[in-house]
Length: 138
Image 1: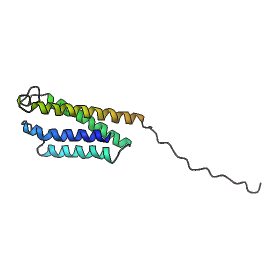
Image 2: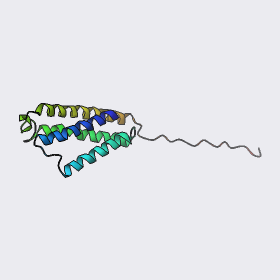
Image 3: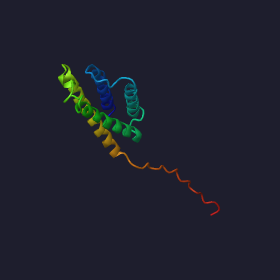
Image 4: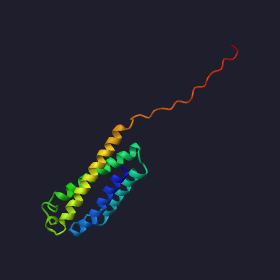
């Protein structure tokens, strides 16, 4: 599961600079800091909170956010389908990057949802050992 989330982060990070070459300035200024913040939280959930409920929830939310990225890049006036990206020479690589992002994000979301489903919802209490009373005076 950790490898899948890291692969998704690498695919997103690889696609960001490529978007700038296509005339999309998504990764300028504050948006760049937002992307870095999302990656840090996502990797923290993957590496530090591994196999914990909070980690799985962070991975699930990050994966769902990763599923939105290909949709945003494909649709709209400046997207692959109707914009300048589709007319460029490097559109093939960009589209395959988006497809790889979608597949890895979907797989990561499925794995984290499956792991959340299998976790027990309540913690099992560990009772302290009972003190055996010794009969005094009997």
